Amino acid sequence: MRLPRRPSASLAAAALLALILSSRVAAAAPASALEVITVATLERQVIRRAPGRMESPHFSPDGTALFFNASGRILRLPLAANAEPVVIDTGFLTHCNNDHGLSPDGTQLAVSDLTETGKSLMYLVPVGGGTPRRIAVPEPSYWHGWSPDGKMLAYCAARNGEYDVYTIPVAGGQEQRLTTAPGNDNGPDYSADGKWIWFHSARSGRFQVWHMHPDGSDQEQVTDDDYYNWFPHPSPDGKWILLLSSKVVPDTGHPPDGECVLRLLPAGGGAPREIGRFVGGNGSLNVPCWSRDGARFAFASYGPAP
Image (tube, rainbow, N blue to C red; front, side, top):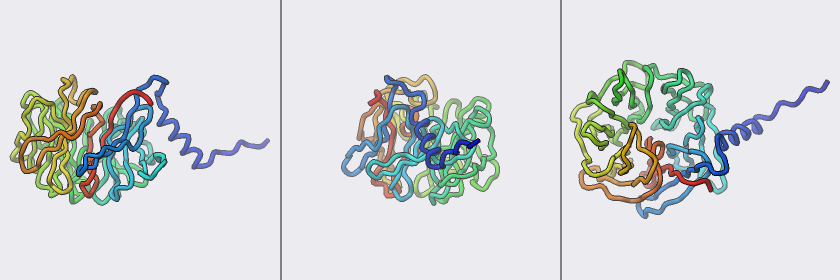
């Protein structure tokens, strides 16, 4: 009897990609887009639009590709014309959420995933794919930032029902709790010089942007306006803080889907400047999303299927 041939690795990868990008998609299903804005001109470019939910795009170190998550997997999309996304081999991690990002040297991918326990845990995976290494902290923990020297991870974690900002050495050790205010402190991202961690907090009664030193000292509210302000991301040149702003009242600790505003806040002080509006929400701007040269940033928008 002739045994059936096993599919080639390339065919298997193509089948997996098709499954991921078509997961839970019907004719009238929502769609999403990966978009890029050039700061100098405010030119807005749609890189990819597809049915389903693509989230948290961020640039490769050389600026030639975007990484993003969809249907529990991490994918890499070359920015060349007509390129298709490639699934990153994350081993047994098949329920990745929208909190992931690259190390400063571009060799490792930090991933938050629910596969092992049903709650978010953090792992490091070689950027080209491979065996995940778990970061030994309790659940749930959600990665958000990497120190510029590559030695520390910043993340949000829930301990005893309180969501706070923590850090831990990449090499291992004890986690350090940086915020203690009641409520939700989330979305930490390091400034390019490593002197500040920016984050959002509900401690004032409305989600606003705060910053502090990496040891948790000198916590200071930076925005105070009619918007809910989320996920501040400092630019690599130290000039700007990119914000996701919304007037839609949140019913969870994440920005709800609806009209969102992209704003640039001068890092040295001043009022935020609106640079774009779109339909978005959680997963639009969750992770560090600037290109390494600071010329562009990426985000995800949501809308009707094409």
